Amino acid sequence: MTSISADLLDALAAIVGADQVSTTAADRDLHSHDESDHEAVLPDVVVFPGSTEDVSKIAARASEHLIPIVGWGAGTSVDGHTIPVRGGIVVDFRRMNRILAVHPQDFQAEVQPGVLRLDLEDHLSKHHGLFFPPDPGANASIGGMLTNNAAGVRALRYGSAAANVLGLEVVLADGTIIKTGSRSIKQSAGYNLTQLFVGSEGTLGLITAATLKLAPIPEHFATATIAFPDVTAAVHTVHAVMGMGLEPAALELLHADHIQWMNEEADAGFTVAPSLMVEFTGASAPMVAEAMATTRQLAETNGSTGFSGTSGLAARNAMWRLRHGTRERSRRRFPGHKWISMDASVPISKLPELISYCEERCRERGQESRVIGHAGDGNIHMGLHYDPADPSAAEAAIATGHDLITKAIELGGTCSGEHGIGLGKKQYMVPEHGAGAVATMWAIKRALDPNDILNPGKVLPDLP
Image (cartoon, rainbow, N blue to C red; front, side, top):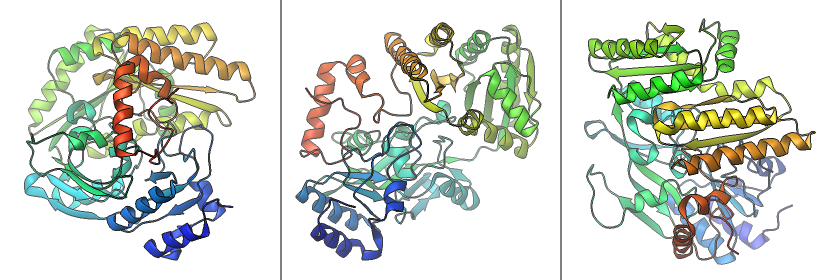
């Protein structure tokens, strides 16, 4: 049963149509949780706008009634980013899913927030030979990717979502519609509002359109999975590859267990050991082949124990599908377990120290450690699972996750390389940024959302 007044429900129905306002148990439950294990919270109502004007009117009504409002894309967040912790209105952008324009000559596209990543990729590749570089693995919405500053396996070469957006259309808490940035690649006019909203997790405004930077699909590629005797040897190879200026398009670290599970699932034939997945792309076949040959030599210098290069586009795509399936594959192995998904990033020279530290903490607590990550930019992930019936196991997982984040910050890194803050990492904002910086963030939040109705309870630690 919703606690929102009948008058407000009628007002929302007048904006989007009665059939686009839902208080059903099924819709409310669907929008009460994301892919994290944070506790679900039911919204009071789910609204499906069809335009920026609809979103503006919804926000204005929410502001008038001091009702929380949370944006929703595909629900693929992993740290409670879209859980409506104070109830209120969830704005589901699924109807705002149009590709508004593609400017192939400028390598740009204008899209609505509900466009799904794979749908955009399919359209761009079929019709224009282009792609949008950020690749978080999940079929996330573009709006969700921008609000969370998603990255993924291609960020090493192309950067995160923040590096691939030129401008936004945003609805503020009171319903005001603003536009940021432009279609010019170079911009130096006033405050960079585009980057302010990217990564803000919907706490400062609701993105209703975006101008994206695109890249041409590479004509040639070389891809391989390289096995090592231990993680340290693999990480030393990462440092050597980056130090040589080889510029891989992707450079991923995988635990031996994940390699074993890939073999079992797809008969991949990989050597079961800590491994790097590496890819080079370019306009010249000899260029990418030479880069891969040099990488193989560097790996052999560090004691590599296996090299599995792909041949053909289908094999290459199959390899990356296996990589993207790591999270779901892990969860299937431990049914009924809860997971703490940790994401931290450090300077690449500090990566061996961080991984060794994490593995030692896990050994001390009798935990299984399966560190993976985007090794080329120092970003690691550690999924800690535990039986919820065992309170001590839960406490140990939380403690190890805390140790990982604390160590990353100590090494000059960050508590999140790409997952964002959401509900799970608010306590690390002051240790990482300092009280003064967090107070400045709160000042920005108050200026744009004085009543704290936009995705409240996320990103910033609660004030005393």
